[in-house]
Length: 219
Image (cartoon, rainbow, N blue to C red; front, side, top):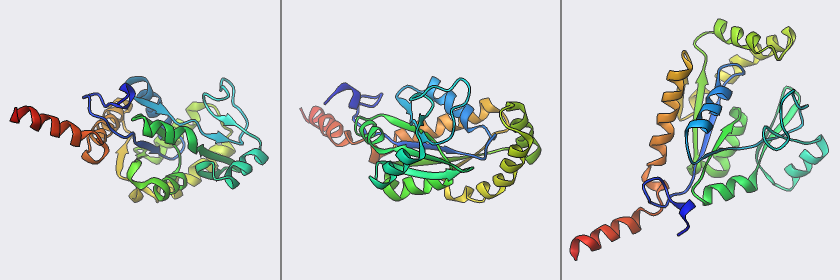
């Protein structure tokens, strides 16, 4: 058994897909960054997208920036676990790196919308844990969108309009976190991940571990 196949308690386990979704500005990107920084054994899924690169973004780290033709070719070859069109841009998750990580006992974090989450469930329900992040109020969401200084007023109005539709899918998620305070929200999301890592069905090495314990007790 390779060392990277082991959980932190020495028991082999299969990795999980940990999904965070929210309307734009509700905090999923900040929470994702904190999880990657503070939770060992968790890696970020790098999405492919056709949207233009923003200042400071790095190819292969933030996104795989592709033209539309190449993206559509990946869809036809079934090389994406999920994909969607958001604000006229295409987003999708390459399949191969995720499947390799899960088999090696690594967890993969997804920052995707409800459409992508549905597709992941259809393909790998047992591996998916989904969390929807809600803002505490509409006014707070609008304030956060303006404070990012990334979008025009027209784009922000579009995002606010879309937020209501996105939030209508909240009941499809395993967990709901209301992001009133980012530190508290992080604590809640972190607790969810820790608990899901301990689920019996994901700890594929438990049978071997328990049998060895029994053998020791009977010796």
